[in-house]
Image (tube, rainbow, N blue to C red; front, top):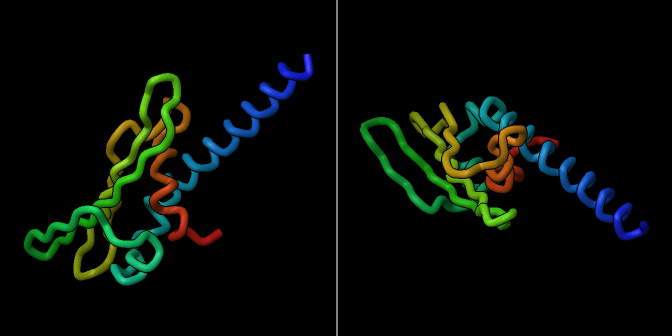
Length: 115
């Protein structure tokens, strides 16, 4: 009985973290708009891929989470900058479940958001 209670408690705590990460990833799509490239590099580090097309720059970060029931969760976050300022953020990959969309992307942007 104690083991079952412990499993339920751990599951509850972990699910709370997952929902918090999903909320963080969602917030980033609006709160990081207007951030400079310099500040992005300071908080998120060096991107794995960088591309420049005309006056737009694409900085892509990649992260992966754990294997949950045979499904590998991952996120590829691409920041689209114009004149060195973030204009849009796109997330791709298997970023979370139906109720926790984009939660794996929080690992990429968490140091960039204000508490």
